[in-house]
Length: 88
Image (cartoon, rainbow, N blue to C red):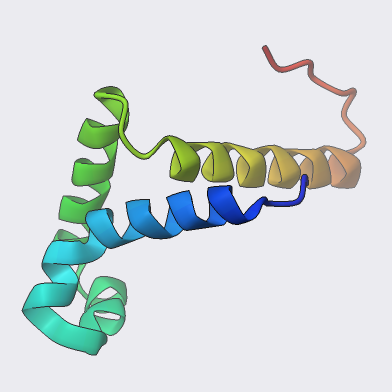
């Protein structure tokens, strides 16, 4: 995976703050635990992310997520000995 520039890290942090802001305001520092335990709360955050992503928000988080998925796919392909798949 490519290394992150300070600007991209700042962008991701800003996007995370926006994405999780309502939960952090409501639950304080325990919001992370609440997200792990409350499926409905996690679904609301996921929905917020998907809506935002569709409107052009969260580009840095989307790029990061795509990179993680590609890394996992590459590892799974190595584990299963399947031929490589060229992604668009």
